[in-house]
Length: 264
Image (cartoon, rainbow, N blue to C red; front, top):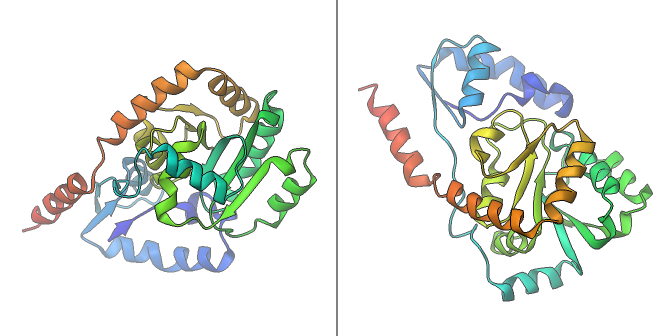
């Protein structure tokens, strides 16, 4: 079995009741019956052992960002993507499903606190998820609403230009089973500010700025400082590309094969 995350256990308030109930009723029982569980991070494996008291063997095998989709894009494709989505300024980017666990309300609050906020658009890429009406109302009621772009779904071919064109990528999520958007941004050479929680440090390593997702002042300060320092952005971009190179589907496939072969 594959264990992606423990959202239903650790953050039940960020899931719809029906999904939460199904996970609670069936998932834990099935996990305990299995001979081998594959988790997508060491943190998820640790949580399963410590919180769920799972005694089944759990091997952690990381995900990867597909290199044909996530790469440092050329200027022409960046310009085309910006024109398509109405991005007229330098921009701060976040890519995720628009739902409570992603903590976008903290991102909006931090953005409002930034002295230079009028110089940058805030671009939020992703489909609307569960319980987001309040967040949309907050955007409309804010003094930066005209500077926020909600793109909705973006085709995979346009993700690299969107990531590559951003000044910074911000991902203040409360909890992730892995945190793939962080890896995607780093692979595109975009400097990252993200959370210091759950599996995110495993992905980011020393190639991102990490803050407490509950601390909007720290998030705002980190964003402002990074935006005002081209040399720091350049350094984080290079470190992110090197860090992302440590993850690949080939490596993960070899790890999975070794796990399966160990049962022979």
